[in-house]
Length: 531
Image (tube, rainbow, N blue to C red; front, side, top):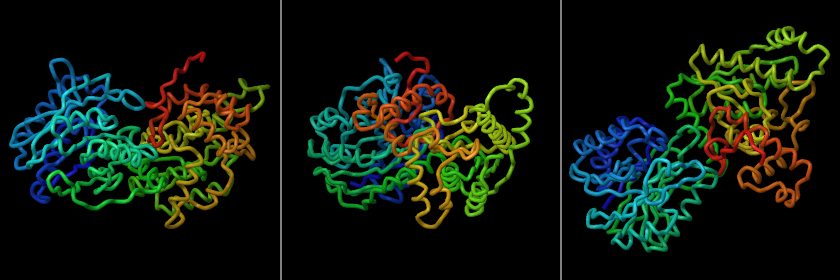
């Protein structure tokens, strides 16, 4: 038996387009790869996650029509694909087995995740039965995604006679997730003495990125095939009965390589799936915008990226020099639009109202908002989406300006801590300098007042990021963080800043999720709270 693993990039809601992808992949598997079975990811027909599209009867009608088309168009190969199935007592997250022009069997997902970025209990009813089908004389059991994280669904398939398990997935990326999956599936395989075919989705969907990395595990829990990460692939694995034969095993990537690839794919799919011509962003000469520019160019190509330098009275010459140098190195079109005339005009308009009041963050925010107006104007006029350049450390503590540097449609590094921004910048420069070295080594600054540096307002980023990781990603309380050796006043101030700036984050654009707990779908804290 030969099994093809369809690690493909599907578009949420595009049932017709997804149906065409299934047909093309199945024909390729049958005619070019001589496969007997092709397995697709979870909710193949709708894409994942379809969210409240599942509440629209029209979506389910389109799915039913698509299944009829699949039955007409595909023969000579068995196909296992995911779709939402409307049952008498609810909607199910299901897998269908198509063979000889008919759906011969089906499986309803048993364990519905309802944590982190998942809301499946909002839409689906849990299944309870095993599904085992005969394919080329092998008894093949089926489970879906979360089912593999607990042993009961696999045991149920084994008890029903399964000799081999296929698991359909839409498992989103976060740092460390690829190895975490394999360790878990290895345990399942060893516990049940059964090989497992793990097929994962690939592609960006709003803030989520699915990294692929599909694999086949033998009954001893060893990987005998692993496909690539963050790319489409359709590998085929041969089986001797239920025993998988060794095939290509692509190596895992470094942490920096994984994260960078996730950011690139996330930006690429968000821009392209939403139909934008390209992107525009403000290039300040600082490290955040420098990294964002590199990601944008690697995602879309230099011809689809424009940058704008918007110096103010406080912008250092070296910032302009480094920004121009990077733009020229990457071959992107750049504009220089000083904000001094707009800044002066706003100060003049507000002169009477500000009379007798000391300068403070108000004047700094006006500068950021002047830049936001310019960037949004260029975005509107050109049809290019505006990328914001803020990182997770800044977003956590509110070190950003509403309607200023937070303005935009997508925030590529929104979930990237500042310390990782530096690591990724060095990683991107490994084959030659793209981000000027001075941008990486000079002290970070918002350049909104004379001689300003980030350390005027924030602790060292190594300390800040660790406090934020403990508070946001691990839900540690203030007392526990202090017990770990961090300064009482610093921890108290930083955690209060996190809590007080939830209102800003609610108004921020979406961005790529790369940590275990990102702002948005992952972390839903009340804005108004006495906790």
